[in-house]
Image: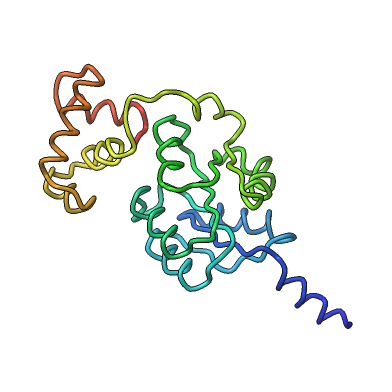
Length: 210
């Protein structure tokens, strides 16, 4: 077997990856980190392109930011899981809040890494999720098991409220009723012992939940 043919055969057996991040320097850095053992099929910079690429390439692993344009955890991860059922999803993010971490796994993530640890943990995370296990950055283990006040659905609504969206627009975005949005809004005010909706938005900003 010649050298060129060997390289082609190696590519065929390498696990395949799609990378999604709206910062080019980050996505290129990830690609360089994984390219020896994984085949990078596509690099995208928003949620819509990510979903399209996943449908087209059917990768083994998706590495994605969760704060890029168009990204909503419930919708985007749900679409990825439906259109690319075998893919493992690793969230690579700046967010270390327990609410977001737990919501990511509830919506289908297999791994969760904070960006400043990617250079140390990403290769291990890839091996772990391919083996069928979940991976969480070491510094987030306590938060992964921490009991949080808000549910994943409430977190979705809170993030959109903090962006200034009305209950009607949130309902359309999340495919629920406006009454459900209002119920969760006032339930969150009660659960967090806040005074009003403005305090709820302030809470979201203070916790970096948007």
